[in-house]
Length: 393
Image (cartoon, rainbow, N blue to C red; front, side):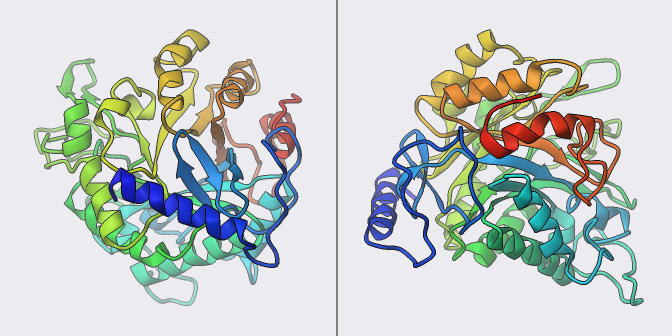
């Protein structure tokens, strides 16, 4: 979508919202609500308006405040479920959504597995409890059920192309850039959710350059390739040693075009280089589309990890486009002040943030000790921010 056409679409959406909307639409708050608790209700309908994300239902700024929910990117490749929800009661999606809503969350990022969606590389792997083989249709249905449950509890959803099944193994990993199958993935995902105004699309989790075990650069990702493709990353993911085998990368402009060609007009999230930590060339290389959101992944072990860097590299982007901190975490998030500092910076710059991670695993960054919602030590510290936008840990 060209920028003039997208600007017109924004105006139409806001006009429709201003003219009444649905009976369940909440009243306008008259301003930013990030510092107060947000009651459960209809899911936000995000739309890009210049450098802001607005909720089309109200025309008010919307700053996502939520979490990454991890599971759809790996369980289906490892062969033990479509996600960790499998086998957890009669309606696990609804039960999980209720727990997330009770935490005060209004946005959930769902990392997805390209091969499990498409049925490539032998994914989804494994046999279901009823003895049937898992299928891509079953995977898509489980994703859809969770998206529906999250919306019903007032949460917008970011669908993220996160991982792939490893060739010949029941394991998963993250490759450096999209490939031709990624366009097929996005054509299908975008077509499936084109009429869902409470969904955003995260084009590719974390683009990155590649080094070998000795620290030698074996694949350099440039901003030109990020946008236009044509470079050749290693086939192997970043948890395997690279070999000489490569594939032709597809750029973000082609991903955006695939989503638009499928009829979807929702915002598209684009992370930068260096595992989505580097935005220095984002403005100059963003595709021509007025519904783009810049994404950064903020971790204390990445290069851009302090206020001087955020001010120099992220703030100029936030002044011209919506900025989403799509993943926020730290090596030991309960031990230092990195997470509250970067969340405070985001709030000061009108940017939303999604914590890594709500998880069933023993990830040290997990906010919970399992999917029953029991908070970890870090989760207890983060609970106030999730409810009100203020860090109380």
